[in-house]
Image (cartoon, rainbow, N blue to C red; front, side, top):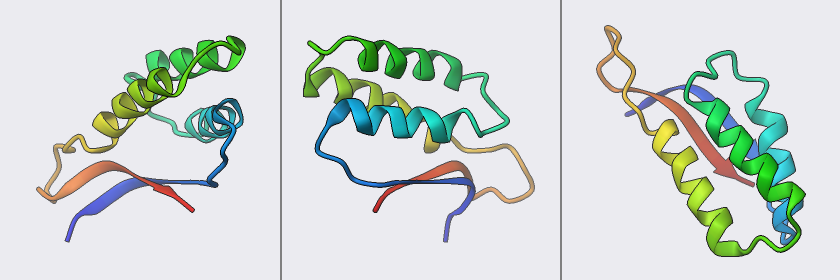
Length: 87
């Protein structure tokens, strides 16, 4: 079983700008932001541009999933960064 350092629970929303806002609010609470700064910035750009589409959102979300799936170097070889769950 995989252990996760962090868990993000995101409430489903059909409005992608609202969903992106919610994700950003959760991400800024995570103390380790080295990789996340760029992802947060991309979500903020998405939020500010009402012409953005689902394809762009999915691309940013894929980057977030990649971050979440990263292995963490620790004694527990199965630990990963973050479980991202839509509820």
